[in-house]
Length: 31
Image 1 (spheres, rainbow, N blue to C red):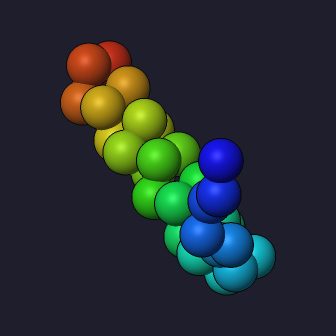
Image 2 (image 1 turned 135 degrees about the vertical axis):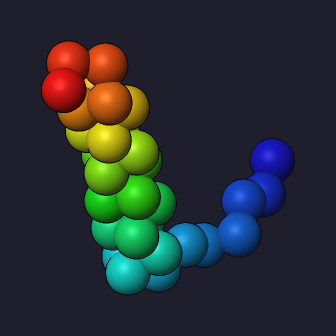
């Protein structure tokens, strides 16, 4: 199986985007 190599930058963008979405949804619930 061959995966396209993701750059470190792309990985961080994905992680940060995911975390921001998670925080936003939690904030929406509790605020």
